[in-house]
Image (cartoon, rainbow, N blue to C red; front, side, top):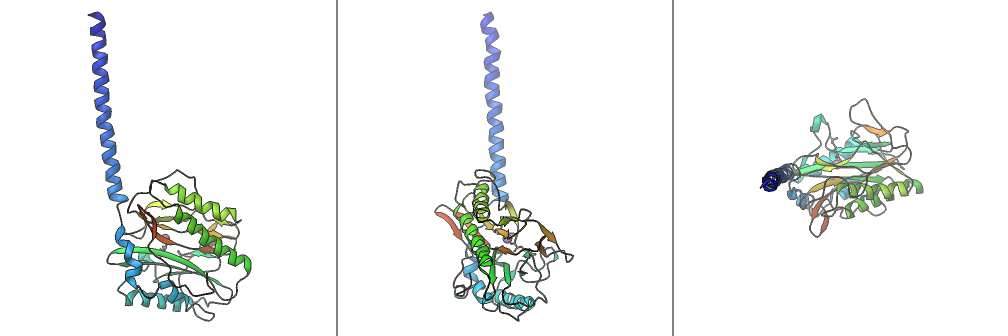
Length: 292
Ligand code: MF3
Ligand code: CO
């Protein structure tokens, strides 16, 4: 009896412990579910946005055709604005935290968030066009760096590597992978080619809002970070430089350029995570020949 009476509370203890642990795990699971439900819920509506906007004429094709020496970035903004409006879309950038234009246009050493204005496009320029637009409440986000006319081979390589890094990031955007797998894939391509990844600027979830969780950095370790799940839509956007990865914010509160004045490139797609693999929701159709 003594032995039994000593064991009995231990046994009850174990049962009670298992019960409490079970309830705790259940609560944890419910919290995770709630988080996924709220913050990482499927944004699949964004899926069709780009093609719904215009299945015939692709945005970057349309605006890219006008990028020629002599045009100002303000004029290019008008072209972009008209394209979006005429198709019933709304710029996601205008008014976003007070941003004053339809799209961002970032020449040469400007990495992101260049405000369209007096810059006159010149032969040899790099011109990054970054557009976020919404249609029926769903937002998609995409960027492309154009070389104007003849650009030197090293600059061309910068563009090719940035595009390849984006492609590698997209290829890693599969269910059960994690954000870190995308980040790592991008970083490997960029640094393997001798260029630098800007670390203070990251990709992001996109769909109901312009910028949602999770962050999608362009550097990181495989197997780390939030898990990718079906229906998530994320903007993958390597921002890379020839020289130092450090950037500086201009006095206008928006323009972000390389600190050392070296050239930068930026390519971005909105991508949906689907069972059969990543789907690019902002596909390029018919980008003009000679432009990469
Ligand atoms: N399109 C940008 C991005 O890639 C965000 C621009 S915010 C703006 O995330 F306000 F500057 F437009
Ligand atoms: Co973006």
